[in-house]
Length: 82
Image 1: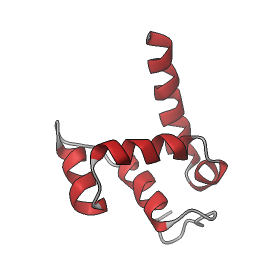
Image 2 (image 1 turned 60 degrees about the vertical axis):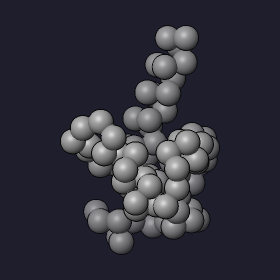
Image 3 (image 1 turned 60 degrees about the horizontal axis):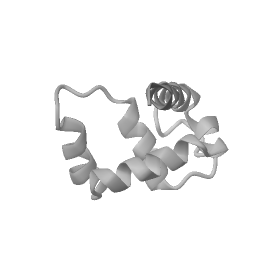
């Protein structure tokens, strides 16, 4: 299913773009942060703040459950390491 075919579940275009960026594979260090700046026009710190909020948003889960659940597991494992 392409991004155009997915229902937006009430998410903003920016929120959908953040989730789409998280679905991609990154070739090396810095590539993702560069894409955040160039494609979304925001600094990485703001991007990660938005992403973290999206992980708790049921609309994001409905829109992209695979990505959101994967990122929730990563977030939880990092919390347990602290």
